[in-house]
Length: 540
Ligand code: GLC
Image 1: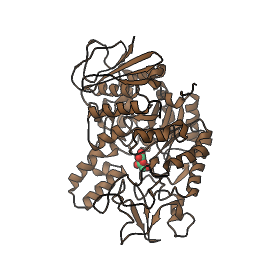
Image 2 (image 1 turned 120 degrees about the vertical axis):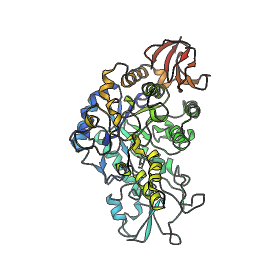
Image 3 (image 1 turned 120 degrees about the horizontal axis):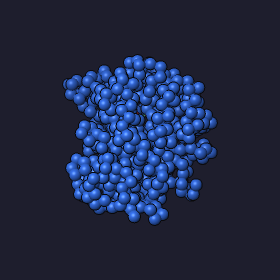
Image 4 (image 1 turned 90 degrees about the vertical axis):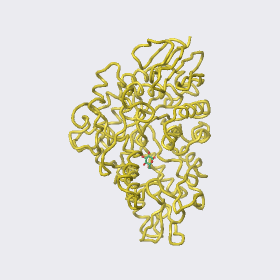
């Protein structure tokens, strides 16, 4: 491979949320043997790398993002033998597997925390962040992601511990070299087992501002990333981990970094810095989640990142994941143009610079799931927020409507395999409700229809792999009416044009070359793009 070519840049990643993927033993929960059973269809789709959300031992307060033992698996998912079999079966097919690495925090059931909370003098005390209260209240005004305060008082020792996420996810103290050395051991142990890399959870939260100063703002609890995101030692910690472990393996590392800017992405991914291979781009999903749907903003954000990062760093690209809504539900059309819009986003994802991540179900155009009662929800953020609102006097129905609209469970409903009961996901009772639209939207139907979303993904993946310009080429924005997103990718004298209609209107657009692929069966109109039409042309 030449200097700038890397397998992890050319790979297409498929994210598996194991709990909702495929249940092989009828307990209602997806598992590793279930993943193994379905490998052939993923291989047929053309994906190269599987990213598994956490499968480690965990009390599952946050679906495995609260780990109680990094060297053991949650028995619901299977045994270590199952995992080894999965690795072997993937490697045999030329596929790789990356795991989630959750080391900003552990579960409160982890042995380190159980020890830590015993006594102020316990050898593990300093593995976590303990502080005295201030005037009978929390040490500072930080609000948590899944709770009002980021601090919880522990009566045994009369101090508060920090948790940016739920109270059951205490933050590790990375300032302590013993913690960093434990993390190195965990990472090395898994790489020795033969996994091919990591997705590093919430990784730019590991270094906190010295002195833990208050967030700016009024009120008892103020949410802001200011003092716990991209802290002063973040890059030093990444470089240390890279030198000690990552650099010794041919692996892929991708960071989940909150509030990432282009400059941050370069700082964490530029090869010369020796940190991670890439971080996820989230500006577009953050914008959607805070402000709402805005196609102009989507184009502006993607264009700015493509231009800003080329030759300087690398990103992971995703439109959906286990924390986000489904792409057809937020930027496409769930009803009339569901298939067209799903295919349009396949075209966009697979023609930008950056490693594409497909979230399970995206390749069949799955939509957001909603449930009728709070009891049907599992997301710790949803449930905690609901409880806090009701406790504060908000009408339960109003509180429910509010939390339901943003629940992360929107994208966590079981994979829709077929039109059989429970979408063919389980013969037991699914741990979370299936989306009733599985009767029409399912893999079996998608496989049977040569024009389906699935087969379109498969063709787009193949096109990307056969076309180095789509992976490494320069990105050139093309002037176009506001409904459209048009750009070129160019490398070594070969140029491709991507034309996407992000609207439900038919819009004039003169085709610029020979169409290689499109999401309508035929290119009947060379001078216009129909609703959500997407085309890739080769420019002569
Ligand atoms: C990341 C994960 C999310 C989890 C959180 C805490 O954002 O993607 O699912 O709740 O970190 O670990």
